[in-house]
Length: 196
Image (cartoon, rainbow, N blue to C red; front, side, top):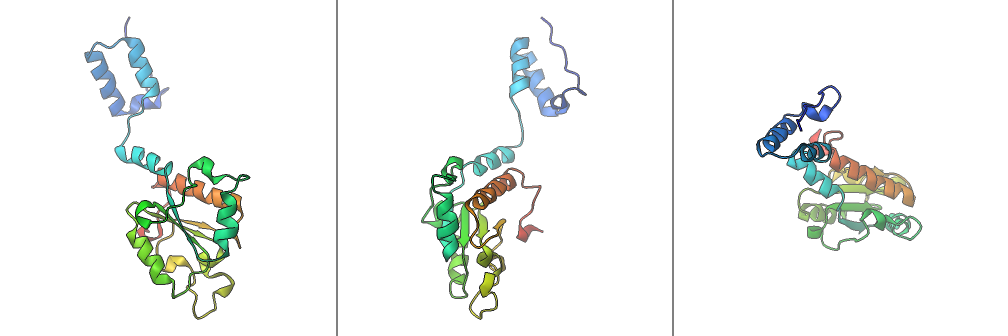
C-alpha cells in the first residue's frame, strides 16, 4: 500500500512543517499507512505554551477575597446547586494565596484593606489572574465619593476580568470564569491591563 500526500489546500494541517516532519519520520520508521493516517487525523503538535495554557484554564484554583455583599450574594449563589460552579472545576476556594491561581475581589475595597489586597496578590505564584466582582470592586460603586474607598481594585492590581452588577447574578459569575478561561487559552486575543 502506498502513502499519498494529502492535498495541502484541502487540509490546513498539511501546511504545517511539524506535520510534514512527523509524516517523514513515520515513513522512515516503516509505519503502516493506516497508522500514519490516524496520527495525521488525531495528533496535533503545537507549542508547549498552548498546551500549558489549556491545562491552566481547566484547573483554576480561586481564592475568594470577600469584602462585602458580593461574596455572599453572587459568589455563594454561583456555588449552589442551581448554578453549580463546581461543574467547571472552580468550586474549591483556596485559603492561601500560595495555592491559588485566581484572586476574586468581591466588594468594596477600602483604603485600609488595600495593602492586604496588594500583599495577597504579590504572594500568589505566577501565572496569576484577578477577577473584580461587583460594582464596588470595579469602580467603588455607590461609595466611590467616600474618602475611605478605593475607586476600583484596578488602581491597585491588574484585573483580568470584570463582572459588573450589584451584586452580580450567579450566571454572570460563571460567564466571568468562562471569559477568564478563554483569555488563558488565547492570551494573544486580550492583553492584561499592565501589558498594554
